Image 1 (cartoon, helix red, strand yellow):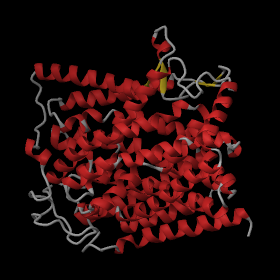
Image 2 (tube, one colour; image 1 turned 120 degrees about the vertical axis):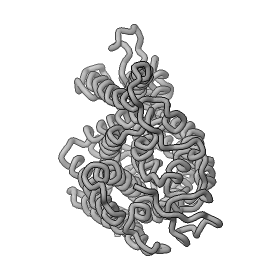
Image 3 (cartoon, helix red, strand yellow; image 1 turned 90 degrees about the vertical axis):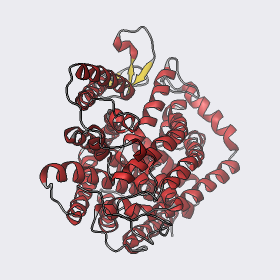
Image 4 (tube, rainbow, N blue to C red; image 1 turned 45 degrees about the horizontal axis):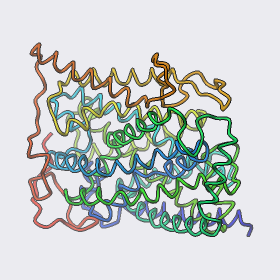
Length: 547
């Protein structure tokens, strides 16, 4: 067999085994029934320490992270490392935010952030707006996972779109059948492959001259590069865009619906706290893999067809033994399908609970809810697949940037609402819409420029807005998502003061202060015993939350 055939064979066998594992996940410590959103959508709220750890890592550290971050470092250098400090500051935020989210959701049986918004601010209209915003922001995020998977197929030399469509089809069947249990079980296998990949990278770099040679080669390349945005250090005025992108990304990750899905699957508050405290371990792997961009420069790697997303797979092909490269491909492939599955489940839960049940079928049974979510999750994945097949791949990546700007506008209701119910529901809706308009308008006016300064694209050319466009005499930039969020918060605070001054009735807050500290031993929605990690001792049992 040729080296290429060994790569493809190893990748195909491992990926096939992973997908079979996902298909069989429905029988993994099988619950009495998967015909409810509690069981299908959040795994019966019964995942213990290990399963929650792997699920959160699998859904929040995606294939696009391991593909796009090294690719960005390869292309522009230091600016590509924004994902590392973003991941680092996300960990303490996760400890604070996720525990309060889990507790209030446990106390009321929430499956989505939109349900929390409805209860906190007493507005089903605001909840529907948050749900639609979350779904719209999630769709391009699913698409970019598939973009990474397609880049890997391109590196393997597998032509046509059928391999990507086949992988999405099988993964969709796994999710349809097993719900959140499929990505949870696959996350364990994925991290085993990822550990192997990290160890292989460390050995390979050590045997190839170490990081000194890699940084020296990267420095020489960037010195000769005409682009002012590239280099081993941030360009002049680049610190503001870098810092605001880090902060905005850290806030956005907790507003994305799929982050909440993994958190709600934990069986108690302590499980959430332990996993949030341990998340920085993934930052080590992220930092190491980010530096693969510099190592690829040192090894003379050239992206396939000019697509920077192929840099890491092409590096595997050129420097790893064929069988080891196949393992690396499988790790990336599974890391793409797992978050795509969790994101589609999260989007489906949002639609079912805050749109279908609220407006279309108020009397829907738990079995009907689960059935609707299953079909919507299929539509979400295939809708994302259709988008990247019909649209230019570069445009699909830009959609992800737009997704981050969009989901940030739900932060006042979804994140800040965990601490205060002072905001008026109408002010929150106005702020969300204003923030969306501001962010999209700012991105519309951002051009894409070549290394020599020529404008390649007049609109939607990035996510950092040059402050010179606001009339300031500076080369600094700012992340449009954070800028739009600032406008959003200004409208929310001013609107709340005005509405309360006019005595416009605010919505009724259905939560209590004690709900944000509730634990598994407190009265709670139905849980399944002996599921995944076993039952929680002395847990009170009560029927599912009233609707």
